Image 1 (cartoon, helix red, strand yellow):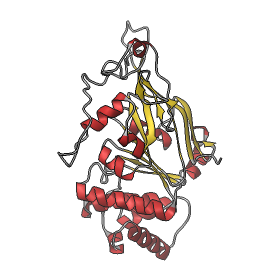
Image 2 (spheres, one colour):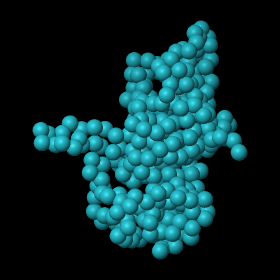
Image 3 (cartoon, rainbow, N blue to C red):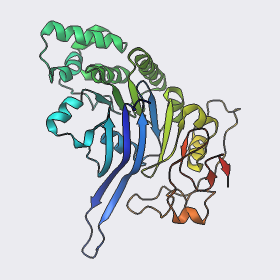
Image 4 (tube, rainbow, N blue to C red):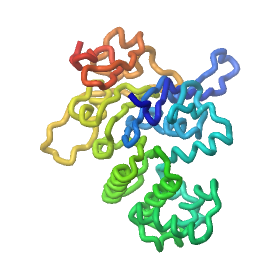
Length: 329
């Protein structure tokens, strides 16, 4: 069996906080805690969860925009966290990122053509004709007219700017793209266009995506597998079809129940979840979800549940739900 394109092993990110004069124990924000997953070539892995659960931090750790506190990010077997500055520069050709805000992630002083070709020119010199040909090719690939290459980002719509960001990410022919809330700032009709574009590009090129989102409707449309995060940890990892057909973890049930349904006649899960998300500075003992979980037992308050395989191949971190059957213990 071949190794996955991307493999994340026990990834941890802590942010130390300055304590007061009498604080003998330093305070730490536990943004990401023991996160592991893999991504195959041509696959879309979606990471979902409430705001503050750590999914965007994971995206930045994958890109080495942040250094991990512990753990490894392996791309084709190479640990990204161990690369020096020169090695990292060459490695960045393999993995690119599409950011949430399609305006602030683009240089307002460069034209669309310059934005697309700038990453390539970091590695090789291009003549004017080659630059224009490359820009035109990539603009057409993302559904934009080649004439747009002479416009500034301020002259483009939100959907056009996000397509431009995707074209820039594609310019280095990466193996994988990290998309952090890539459609959340766009209108619904434009969201659908961008999502269909990403799916078409994946079919044409075999590129892999790690897609960060809080919108379960988007995830259900584009994802192959879904990792559900809560307070820095993955609590369930399953195929998209299996997760939406029968969620195992109580938090996953709550997320799906809270998602808006376009057809009011459709049946939906009713899972009551009370209280607020705990602070990552002072997380609860045991299972972090137990203060809000309607199924919590004493063991949940004491012991952190491991992420273990269920009968259908998904991974679940829950003491109450028996992973082998998905039934309530």
